[in-house]
Length: 128
Ligand SMILES: [Zn+2]
Image 1 (cartoon, protein in one colour):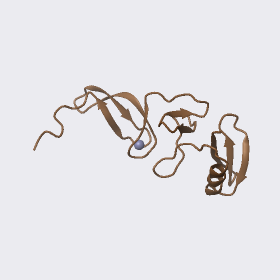
Image 2 (tube, rainbow, N blue to C red):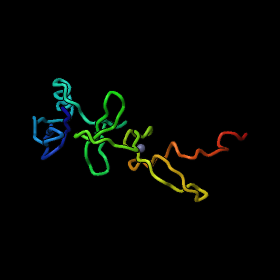
Image 3 (cartoon, rainbow, N blue to C red):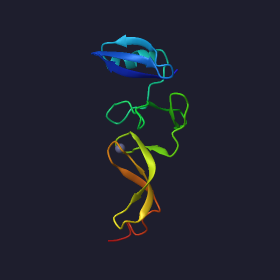
């Protein structure tokens, strides 16, 4: 079962990610995480800083054992990758490079990192 953790009124709630029912209440996040692990609940993806990752709308994001990114209801997050810098979700989108040429890249809205652009810049790394 997929769950997520929400802080509310100084308490920490563990909720069913599909029905949004409260499963249990805790006084801190680490207790909620421990409870979830003990019960084999699946917690959302965690970023480099330990924060739980959400999509742009605030929905918790889950990763399966094949590395596929999904929302709680199984909706695939297509065109998304995990940002190698901060661990949040980066989205495939068109950006303009320094020469105002359009390129397709993964863009992380959380930290602003842009990576794996297509087409690859041809001359980078060749100089010296
Ligand atoms: Zn990032």
